[in-house]
Length: 512
Ligand code: ADP
Ligand code: MG
Ligand code: ZN
Image 1 (cartoon, protein in one colour):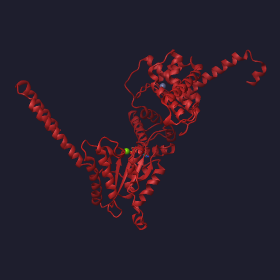
Image 2 (cartoon, rainbow, N blue to C red):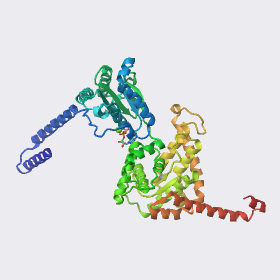
Image 3 (tube, protein in one colour):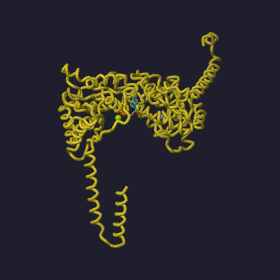
Image 4 (cartoon, rainbow, N blue to C red):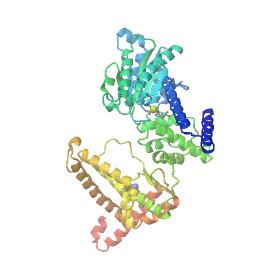
């Protein structure tokens, strides 16, 4: 605070002098600039000295607080037994474990795992992130690594513990293949890390274990993965439905949930969510309860919060009535195709602008899915194209609102080709000429566009009325939408019956 005041007053004096006293202020400004640069460098140096600041683990994390990840937890615990039962390891002459690499997407609980590992083995815990080692000045990164290991030993001694766990997040930032950077800073940092790890021995006390996390094992320098370094690789993947349920149970424990809240349903609706996203979901739902002045968190609050976590915060954008109507028609197109392809999949249709989208249809995944057949991929393309084709049927033209849908549809089409499911058969993705891929993707999209147009054709006259309802309600539940859809289908069937009865022979009526 003081500093800002002084700078402010100083500036005022300089400006005053320059304007009113006719003093040449340029040299003063130059000196001030120099002083600032010097101060800035000082700050950086201090930051260097403070690298690897021990993050005091306030509340200890235990493995029980990590949901899902049963395999990863078991593997990690097994590996940690090397630390726990050190005497036995020593008598058997087993090489100690020095490094464990946790791999997987962000927010899946890697940091939590490392903290739980420290609790489990009663070790001190130090955390750093790969990006902290990247500096403008060569050698600073290496110095920080050295410092980190020294701090770990020091802290363990101070706290009377005989082991320390160093957690390095985003190891790929420093652990990328050496010689690939134009910057030798990275290489020096990585070399220093390897040196430190090679220098660790079983007889040493305290024993140091390095746990690193990354989402990019593929770019790591092979030297890191050699025996005696990061020997163990443990995959920490996105949780499956059971895992999500478990995480939700942990995160909502002790929170006032409404009685009929169905966590299992939420777990089903959150396919692809990481633990961190689930955490944010639970938090958003609680905030919604606070806003509503309710002392219970309800299913609807969770439902809306899923939208928020997926699509981002509601934006202040206010589309015109015409635009809203068009968005509703568009979303209805997605919803109809989705429901016809896989009944019961529409969770709700919303036209509240969120993030980059003006509206959206949320689908309920039937089950977590990792494999797709050609038909399933084509269906997804149909759903993606349903939006713009509904616009086309209703307005006779399209809008820019389908850009993302096209990106999605193209990517699905590309999957069809590269997985060998297209009419050109098995291909080698690496050697597939770009223009062949292009032609095939275009062919698939044109074909599916035609099919989707036909799927929607019978509904073209009825879309407008329901779109109007969506605009009025802003959000329509899947069950309401399904009722509407089946009422239209009934109407159409009756109509067909009537028109065909006229020229049907009695036998066919009986058969029908
Ligand atoms: P990562 O290190 O893999 O990016 P974190 O461990 O930092 O993920 O997770 C961030 C937050 O997300 C945690 O603090 C926790 O609230 C929540 N979280 C993530 N994964 C889990 C999990 N498996 N169980 C419970 N909470 C989780
Ligand atoms: Mg993390
Ligand atoms: Zn769309």
